[in-house]
Image 1 (tube, protein in one colour):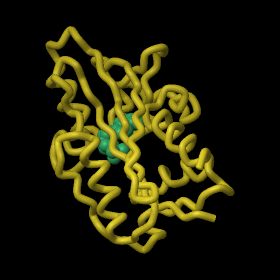
Image 2 (tube, helix red, strand yellow):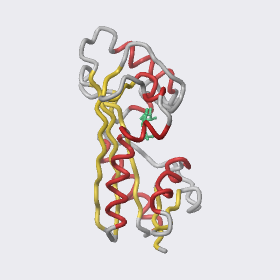
Image 3 (cartoon, rainbow, N blue to C red):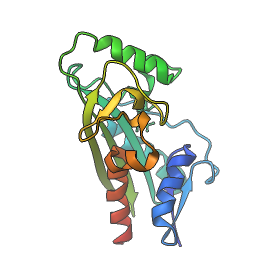
Amino acid sequence: MMKIIFATNNRNKVEEIRAVTAGRFEIVGLNEAGIDIDIPEPHDTLESNAIEKASAIFELTNTNVFSEDTGLETEALNGAPGVKSARYAGEGKDFQANIDKLLLNLRDAANRKARFRTIICLLWNGEQHLFEGVCEGKIIEQQRGTKGFGYDPVFVPDGSEKTFAEMEMEEKNKYSHRRKATDKLVEFLLSR
Ligand code: IMP
């Protein structure tokens, strides 16, 4: 079975992809590949960071590899926090501090429109392929719900009244940016 490295240390993300590619590809996370590096995310676009991550691992392993980068983009803040979503309130990557900062910066904003955007970069036989997944929605004024992670308690996707943090994983996946990008990647892989 062909091995593909997923350039992430997040086991949940690896399991998610494995669930849909089982039997066709061997998806291996960084831990399992024995790679212990803090991959840099120095760029100001999701695309560049995803490409950098995949390229760094390809150079180390010479194996087909994909990486993923996600950000929350708000209209009123001209796309912020965007590529800085994880570290919006500082290097601590503190979810609650990030939410607090976002709500503060949006306190006078009438336009609450926002979207999550995921970019997956696949390096396949040396060729680069990008897959995008977008989820449109809005940022509410007070957080609701305890499930999920990150900005889930303040994000309501279009077509629902619930925040992501009020949804079970299965329901979130009907809307999820990451799921849409992942579906495109899997479709590509399964067509090989
Ligand atoms: P990553 O690229 O998946 O690590 O995402 C970067 C940051 O975006 C995370 O630290 C979260 O703050 C935020 N984020 C990404 N995906 C989601 C999501 O599905 N819900 C809420 N926040 C998210």
